[in-house]
Length: 353
Image (cartoon, rainbow, N blue to C red; front, side):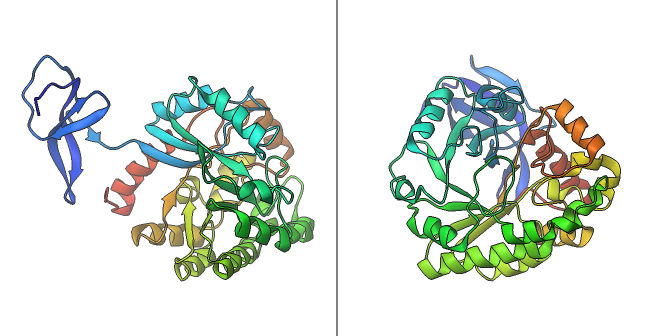
């Protein structure tokens, strides 16, 4: 093959065969065609001296706010921020207004994204108690990365909390079902633990059993029907240990914020800015998540990027009330992944492999 490159990345450090190696990368069009020593030619050259050259991040969980709340973010601005942070492919969630829970709304979102998004993208189809007939017809729907099931209430009005309905969704879908796993009955029962004005009560309200009860249930259903499911934003050491023994039908992910923040410090420093569903928990859970990362038990890191306007966050911070998902204002997960990389190198002894 002729060495006619459109771009040469010179002198960067690439992770090859288990170690960082200083080398060059040659691109022809949008494809890498050579990794190794490259002599300069007429191609555009980027000097990557003292930089690490990595593949673009794939983020499996983002909540852009289009349609419905585009004052906070839209498909164009969210994907632009993603690319700036090194995120080149993303899966976007359906809890918008209106929700992306039927084929008409799904097609509208595809059309809204066309020629506006700066990254690769795919969209989740939202599960409801009444749309299981459509969930069985998604296999050939272009741009559909899976089905999202909210077993516990959070931002938006998508909720499938009854076990019979959860079973219908998992058994009917011809796509992998990704699950926000909290038990709605426990959420309702434990509302008495909410202390107005005390953000520390958030993880007491949505406690460990709230997460574990739901996760046990969805895994049991997936195994009964031999269906694949993906459990989102795992936060507890109990879930990590349980899911590690049930990997045949289940994959799971955690988030950068649950690997960089923990209670009570996060609530003391950030107040309601640290509120999210499922909650940030104590250091014993944080530590177990890191053990799971190091031992390749966690399958995916997904940001759960979910922007809110600063003025709305400030109101909530003053009022100390509940129900916030995610943690960003107008930033994106790429920035947090960058901080995590620094933490891995300096604190965790974690390498790029």
